[in-house]
Amino acid sequence: MLRIAVLVSGGGTNLQAIIDAIADGTITNTEIAGVISNNRNAYALERAKRAGIPACVVSPKDYADRETFHQALLDTVSSFAVDLIVLAGYLVVIPEKMIDAYPNRIINIHPSLIPAFCGTGFYGLKVHEAVLARGVKVTGATVHFVDKGTDTGPIIMQKAVPVENGDTPKQLQQRVMEQAEWILLPAVIDKIANGKVSVTDGIVRVDVSFSQTETGKDIH
Image (cartoon, rainbow, N blue to C red; front, side, top):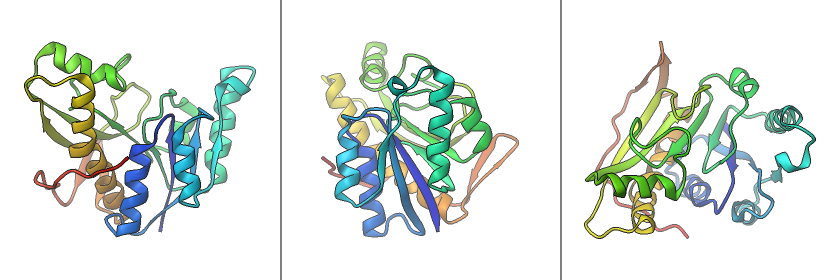
């Protein structure tokens, strides 16, 4: 049984996608051991509560300095005895000591096809604003392992989503969530839980390809 901690900062739609996928059997051999947020007002905490999942807040605002916060975050994650850390809209930089403690055991979902529209400053709606400003025709989402760079870790899986004429950033964001993020993240977690993902020399191998034809999901 794969024990995961899900780190969140906001509404928690990706967390909900994981909760629902475990409930309906899309994700197998997995349990959410705990949810951690840096934001005590995050609706994701309510989602965890409703699902009966332990949840807590570890905020940098509550600590004298960043180093103390980093240690508290690592200690909290460790207290859940997890095998995998899932960053699901977590807007705090992961400390290097955590990356060292969990090598190739931290994954992140990013709302673009890395290496496009990623790195410092590209998060949330800013990604979709940049996509539209550049005029690209295809965007999507990427799940990758976390390393000490920003969105630079080994790519596990990606899913493409079309950009449509007249899209607003909000409309594009919603389509990427529905058609990519809420499908892709559960798929990756299930594959990791069932030993279908490996990393060799920085290259990820997934032994079953991901279907690009799956339909989107409705999560609120």
